[in-house]
Length: 362
Image (cartoon, rainbow, N blue to C red; front, side):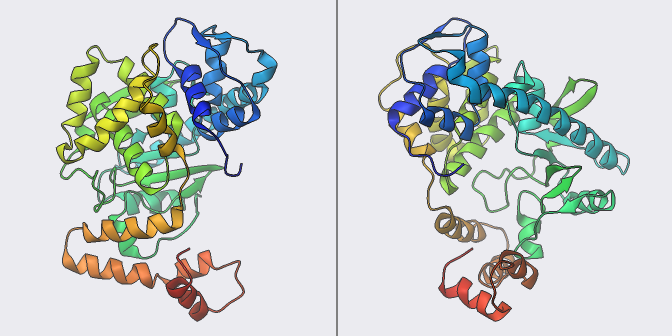
């Protein structure tokens, strides 16, 4: 699906369709092709269809208008079954070698936060292992038949990043995280043993360790903030957080506990909380919020932004020697990396490096 040209009215309509609650949401918008595509692109098409089928949306909408969302709901249910199976297989391989696993993002949300897994599609399976065990976990899974998808700019880049290189295991993309955020990311939290901050979820006989709700909330908020910084907001992330927030006995106290984890980023995280709260209320959407969400959802020049963000994170990575090494490899990556991204270009390694230096990053 290419770039979608959407308007603020489409964002308002998505908010109206996605709002939480058992009471009916009156929908007065227009279910046009752009809205359908936007819902699919941002991961909420299945959620909107689920709400419609459960009579949580009223208005001039026919089921045939939502055919693409219905199809996505069905396919997401089937795909998530396979991903749950792969999660269990990966967890068992690592457990037998003494490496504990925490499920992150989609696998936890679909299995433990949403009532029906089909309403929360996931692109891959994200897991967290203890810091320092990422490469060992990668090696074990490669030995078990996984295939690596790409290589990093350098070994050091991979060591300081939030996750090691992605792999494909039994047809499912798996990301092995060694920390929640890279060492130079402003949302990185130092010295936290996440394995002491977990809760247990069971889905169809599969036990999933999840971050407790405070740390899960922080990860989701910070992940959204970090991605807005580097390319754009996925509307479905707001729905994820709204559902999680609504499950807390004292929402305000809960949000405050989440924000206290990283006081230096409280303002950025609070802005996203404001967006999330729009989905938790049946009140009229405040006018200032629509433009904020609209701007955050717009795709940016990702390549150019990533170049700036990469150097910013290098600057904030601990140790001068690391900074120098990372900066050098940012300009002159490992030859394996260059061959990987230049495989469709008929030119020598030297020309690839020159193109990288003078013709833009890729």
